[in-house]
Length: 393
Image 1: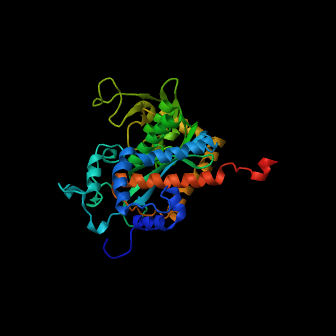
Image 2: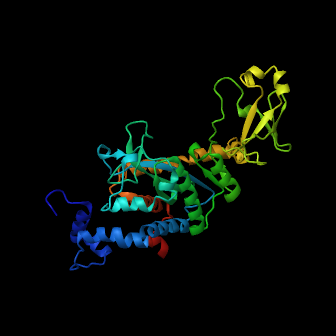
Image 3: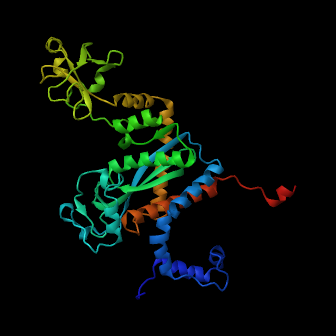
């Protein structure tokens, strides 16, 4: 290697060569030859990724946590955090101008391989504003309200009893990919460990009608999640929440007690009554609205009031009802454990910026970091063995 500071792998090889504890752990003995540092890189890019050994190692540690009773599976929490990519924003190019070269490096090949992956290319049809030629899968984002940067998102699914990470996923740093990752992790945790929580705690980014419906109707998981709803009006007129839904008659009642019934627009699909936005429209009678004293506060610029209702509004209603319970308040506090894990990841483990490039590099680093955090939790919380003298007694 050229002059300069040695890399992390080279320093590791030096430690193995000199440290007897490392030699014992690696079964090298006193005279065993330490592998060349390039062997680690080749294994990481080849054998390790082909065998998915880092995922296996992570899941093995989760199994140990399960065996020690550190995972209760009563409630899970999910969240995502941005980690800066190893990409120089000064060398970025506009997304519309970027093209993959034939002799592109490993990170570019990995990006092309995940264009149809829900966690990356298929998460959003929008072309990124800027792309890094050295790591095109990294997302240009200004989510931190400061200077924009290239980043990946690490997604954690944790058990809220002891904060054990039961799954981790690397995605693009956009909301659609993060919400999709929560579904992937819930399905994988159920298939791998047979765990399905009674409730899932998350912030409002996961509170879309579609995601709430998936949790309530398909997974039968109580969503302890604030509803993501843009129907609140700020102009002084009545919002949708001011109208009462009558489930038996499938109609709304306005603040004046008048009925709003479903109606079909001429350009909606025939006989469906469903708009392109995935809603059904409910309309008041023009006669009722003209005679109503509340019209200036309800529909001052329209002949009658119309209220859209999402096809999955019933799942939103479930989430709204849960938000009024004491259990919801408890889960809000327990959800902070995932934020504490992200703080530990960045401040203690020093993962503020990735060292590896490409989706596989991000996945490897996130898996290793989550494994280290679970090992730390396991060592701290597992039942302590009694002293040898106590056993003899």
